[in-house]
Length: 78
Image (tube, rainbow, N blue to C red; front, side, top):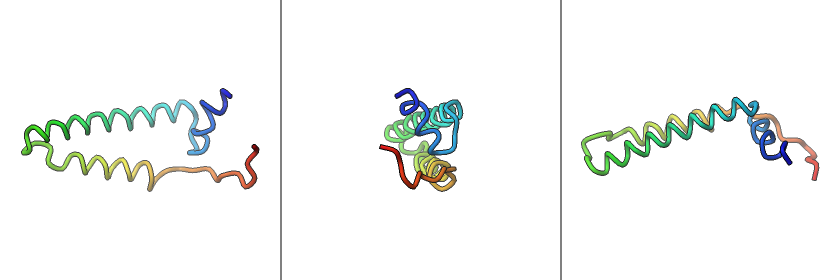
């Protein structure tokens, strides 16, 4: 069970637990700051006009386009 909760997903993206912790934390911090910029933009439309979309593009590029993946097992164990 420990393996499933803490190691299975990081392995599926070719990361150790510690690497995954760092990467996921970076994504969380980036999204939090981008959300704050979007909120400020909602209050003062002149500020952060392109920040939200720029951050989304950067996150997409890093997470989806450039993700390292290990191939899924051809016959996964039940």
